[in-house]
Length: 258
Ligand code: CO8
Image (cartoon, rainbow, N blue to C red; front, side, top):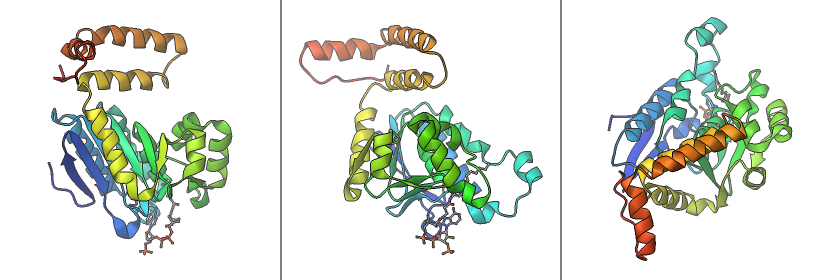
């Protein structure tokens, strides 16, 4: 694994763990951190020994947004010319499932980064928001689109227009997070979830992720058709034979990722 300065990368079994690590700036997302997260995800994504990725921050902050100090002096021609922050889009090309474990602030780009993951497990201290409007900008890493798809127009519009935060309970009720756990248990709970995913057949997990994601990109009829074809494809894997044989023989499956 490459050397990084703004993140920590670790492995536990088949789970790759990326921890945002700019504690003094509440994990504000500067360009270096963006390059490093994207590089680490891409490295883990192409590693056959990794079946799930866990992305997390600190107890106080998952990430308090894009780095305002880095952004403040930029001109329109700079941000437009370099397509500022478009590199984050590469995370949505990752095929390995990515779980976000969010404690504390997930604001602006921090909320958007969490939403770029496949799902979010939140601690009871998590706070989500898109406060960009208070800085005279709008979300720029997909927040206006992914938050709206996650929580619906009313809440997304209110949050994007007022900059107010959602606490963990509201985020769970609204469907932004899959579940809430006590802050002291967040890492272990998220790791256990990622480990469960990593114990499945990796090609089949990738197919499952692709099928769910298709729901956001197409019509219901086309999405169901896509799902049916991918479901049929699972029968081309050895893991389908193994999974079903294991059920019938009343034993745990031994997936070969093939
Ligand atoms: N950027 C840079 N530094 C930050 C950021 C940030 N987003 N957030 C916190 N910090 C720094 C603070 O400046 C402070 O540093 P210093 O000690 O050197 O002054 C340190 O982190 C600790 O922060 P606070 O003292 O403010 O800590 P508090 O506990 O008092 O407050 C808050 C925590 C409420 C999270 C507060 O820090 C805050 O409001 N932060 C900014 C939140 C915000 O507005 N985020 C949105 C940023 S904009 C954005 O994400 C746009 C994304 C889209 C861009 C796409 C471009 C194409």
